[in-house]
Length: 212
Image 1 (cartoon, one colour):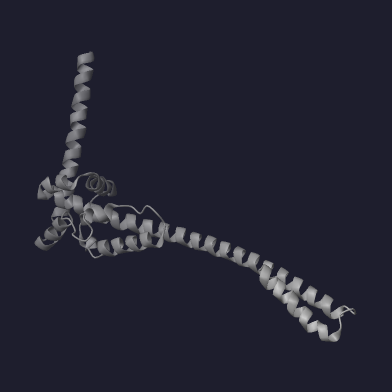
Image 2: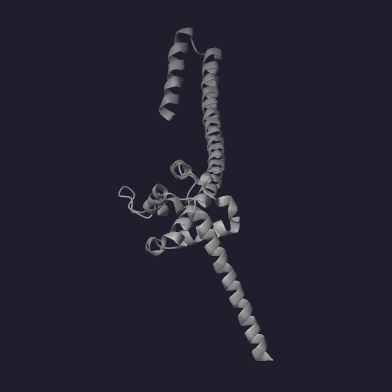
């Protein structure tokens, strides 16, 4: 009885594996059928190291932003512009379930450059195509997230700048009030002769400048 159950379970597992393999093959065939020689060459170029960056375009496109600063936002925009240059909408992606596209994109992100190069063309190209299609959606979401964070940070910075300005303005007004009070006390002091008013006012101002 146990042996029979084990055999049935093994048989079912083989069916599942076989079904997945067949689904993979259908996906590869559907995607690869849309490619011409130029597109294949361009896809292979994703796996070639870029002399200016020191790593492959695929690696660059797959790197998520680590911060929300302006440089990262510009870098994400450059990535999206690069991805949008591909004729992704002309590929037969609508015939493939989104889960399969994400699965292939995940393979591309997790595989080493050498592993992808070793894949047979019928598998390598669909994997890279799925990566680009997924990257277009992912980068769009990432840019929106970066933009939201930049707006929030700009608002916080502006709020802090306004607070600092208000504090400085309050301090300046307090000093002005003190000077005006001192000047008024000199002008209104009957003990100060008319010819002494101007020298006394200048003395008050010099004290303020010395203590500022």
